[in-house]
Length: 391
Image (cartoon, rainbow, N blue to C red):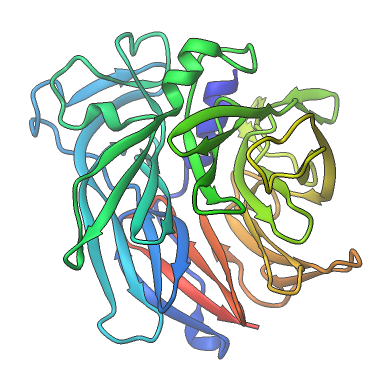
């Protein structure tokens, strides 16, 4: 059940009611026309956004359309990429990495997978490609690797591309998350991998990666991949569902890691449903902290609870927590909300929920700024956006 429930958060409505920035003096639209925008990162005057893409067309590639049971037919294309957005408004947005693999199913649902997150470290871009590749697509949700499709080996990996001469080029695989899942299966459940998020640790040499489908957190140190921990199921009113980790942040204040969980969906008589109030952010605590090369014994404890379908979060410069809900009232609604959790535990809705503003339609990427935050909106739409909110 884990694999299907994880994918449920991609089943979004085709007709979006986007946030009305024109009526909000603290909101501005930084980028439009993005092909299913997902994760965000910021360096200097630029933001970077991963675009999952919109798959391909029938007949574009031999064997380019295939069945992924029990979901149906998907079509493969090279429509994903990474875009750079000028935060000062000059020159707008530019696709700096193009031609990344993407898979989409447009009927009966609108489902897409591909590039899921982006991270800037010095002159390198790191990004994750969700789902995994495999040779038996009839038994697991994955992309067939033996069909001659271009760049099929990118699935389920972390990739890097360096900046050379003002352009990013030369994509290389630096970690095979799906390969680790297939070989070790850390949580002992069905084999399934979906790298969703990557972040920097205490130094540029240490990265942390979330595998949402594998319910696992990995450390990537100078090219060496190791498992940090797996996440236990969550009690949804007597039914256990997956935690589904989807974002991780290193907190320099205490040297520990924090992870948000989407939480799996329940099967009901009317289909799939999210459960309000069971999503949470946990602290992954190391006895030696995560500042050094060795973390020692790791424990997991609740940090901020009572949310619904979390999809991202970040810390502000003063240590407050900003939290993004994909849905505030629970799937299949996509009334996204942003919350502020102060260090004293005080909680305030900033956008959506009971804030009097919003909601944000199907938000999927989030990053804090010195005086606000960025959100990618319409995360499976072919005309998604990036919004900036000032606090």
